[in-house]
Image 1: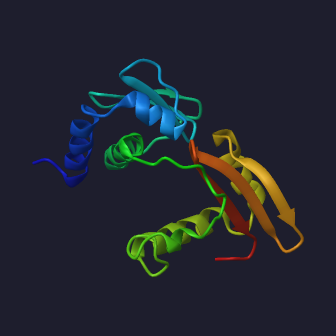
Image 2 (image 1 turned 180 degrees about the vertical axis):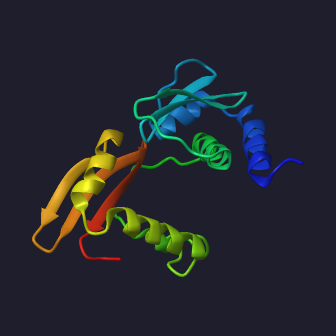
Length: 170
């Protein structure tokens, strides 16, 4: 039986068949390799988005994910190419919890588990965190005397994020 994440990916693939790659690449600031191929860099990995699907073609930094996460990631990359966005970033940031009433709320078990795993892994050691994220191309921007450390990263073209690490926070 086909899993939900597989259904989602297959649905995204079906939408890519009718996508105007030239228009998408222009609006989203992506490179167009050919009429039917757009490469996207994502956290040290390069994927080719084509009319037939999304494939990992290169890993600058090797990392592994389970099959479900890989399908979800490919769906997100496809959604990005399919989006009708036509704007420039405002560089006005807010916390992840402000984007959704569901999965990103602090009270959600998914985010709570993620926060707990992050805390268990890094504690208040920003240098350990820095060693992990530097290979992905995140740019260290700010340190202040209050134990706040900031990195900038373009998750996708025209989609900047800011990672803020506070020593002592859980």
